Length: 291
Image 1 (tube, helix red, strand yellow):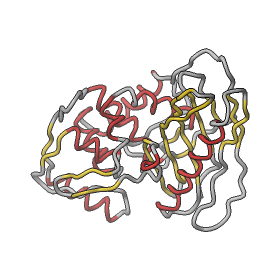
Image 2 (image 1 turned 180 degrees about the vertical axis):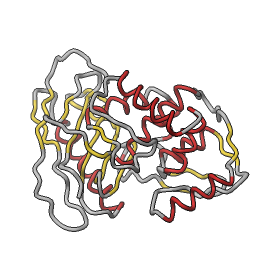
Image 3 (image 1 turned 180 degrees about the horizontal axis):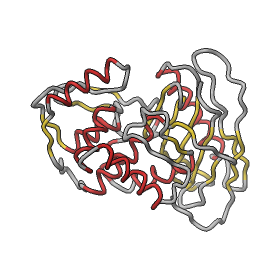
């Protein structure tokens, strides 16, 4: 069962708000936001550049098959297949594949162990004081964070144009895997972002969209964690999407001080979840505090 729901939100260049008394919880594939961020920090892409190219090894193809047997999220690869940095990031962020996270970790840091160390060092540098990474994909439930911390790294990653472009795509086509669909249930509604889901983390979504408040068009960036219950991916992500939409709609009517109900873990496929949401507070005229 997922932990109680939590959320964080920032409008424009305002001060981020988050559920009070947040405790670190599993975040599933939201961990891949840091993986993408570190990749782009080391190997920046601009325009239509494709970046570096890797050739899939026999060991990596075997690992993909073993991961699939464990019910992990993976993308089909085969020995000798060539994938560019852009394609790897697309596979990481859209179908959210764990085997791709490990391949990027090896490329960026030389090994998964060194990459995880870099993830944690970057988290400390960014002030993500409640985050611990134990793997580059988030499959390990010991990878923990909070909504506020995940909003911080998501906003950082969104500074890369290629990251913004990829998390807005409804699908991607890869050489062996073919066409794969974005798991984000709100991508067609203009919510770009990154999903995460499993039985430990529940449904999670880091998102960015636009709202009009008092005639002003503002960017709304947010994170919802711990939505739904059970292990059905579509149900968990539907709950996360519902919570994200509810969070944004709760601030759209006005720009004054308002209490925002961080969505309780929304009902999952197994029935009602009676856990209560937590309050967020957004106020006008605060000094900008970008994550």
